[in-house]
Length: 168
Ligand code: MG
Image 1 (cartoon, rainbow, N blue to C red):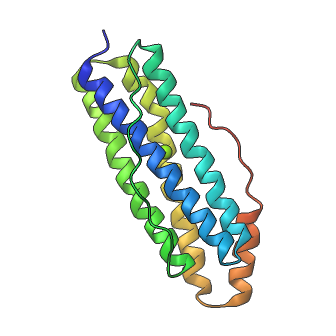
Image 2: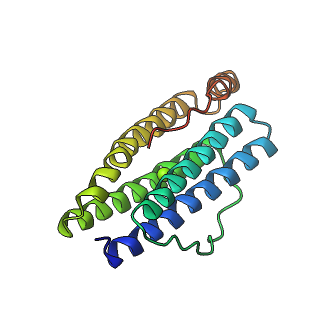
């Protein structure tokens, strides 16, 4: 039995994942605009990953015979003062996502909805990776400061990232 409150919470999470996708697309476009193609690439892959998260949850709701309700996606910021500021905003956002996933997990556990809890395991693990990766980029950016050569190197490194569909 798929409980209404779990279905509602999953629908909310789907919206949050789509908002994340929209945010990272906005960041990607911003960095493309200011001539940082590597960082734009990194954020574009984030955009793809967030869409995969949303789709995985949509497929799961349907598999449980629930109903996916696509709600409006709220507006996202469109510019950032620096690369460091964007990645700091990314870390703050990911921490919020982690808290949302944890709440959802606790809700599934309380409701004895073990299938949903199981589904969320990969999401819990992904958040750890996500936060760790962003922290590392923030450390690198803090280290190079305004040094052009350092920033160029980071842009090249982030430009080498390729998209692999997450196994959700
Ligand atoms: Mg996500």
